[in-house]
Image 1: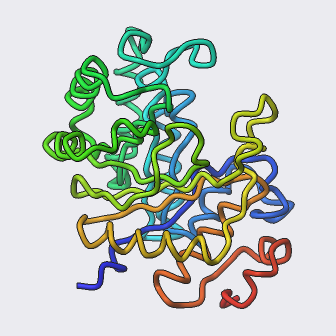
Image 2 (image 1 turned 45 degrees about the vertical axis):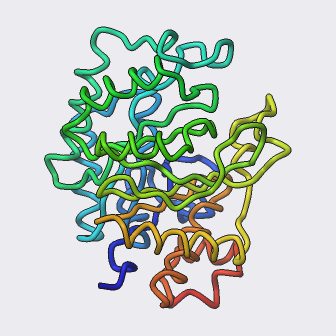
Length: 298
């Protein structure tokens, strides 16, 4: 079977103000964004679920709007940060000792994920840990507990510190039957390097951009993700995506370099590369990024 058939490519988030007039037509209502984006991509990673819990009625509404535009569409969602980050992560390292979810966080989080899953549209749940979360016995025990709590969802770990990228640790993650996210990020300090791991039936890739200058800068968080991948950089990730897909049932590739719509540009370029075809692209996006014009069927 051609591994390209089980790869879905999309973007992290969709409610960015700076996408108006670039990804979206200037007059498009905010409530119509999901449905509009689903015309062009098969995947959106819900990132608001990291900051707050999904209201079940809203999650169902997103699903129905997206499915109306694209029957092949799915969501993935980020696990709420209460389970993956210290509540004051900017001041202290995140570890099993400093992660402190509230008494209702698990119930509220699951209500949102269940709403999306009940529509048959939750492809994966991504637990994203910061680079300060290192591979220690205590932290591994915490991951095992987390996996048990969220076992009912297709769970994927995004762990950014290189101490987790060891054969014994990868085998342990595989035994847990959870996916491991392969990431592209600025390679600063002990940042984990690019890879093509598949430790469960779910393969996952996230592209954060390579903005070394702004990655840890105390500026607008948008600036951190201000990066447009070149064709050469994307081709290497296309090859990794195909490699992951050969080992997994479904593989999700998410562009998170969202500043000024760059994630949408690179996602569409990856679809064109992986599926070897022209793509439909938002007309306003093609105007702002003419490099899409040769790839666009519109």
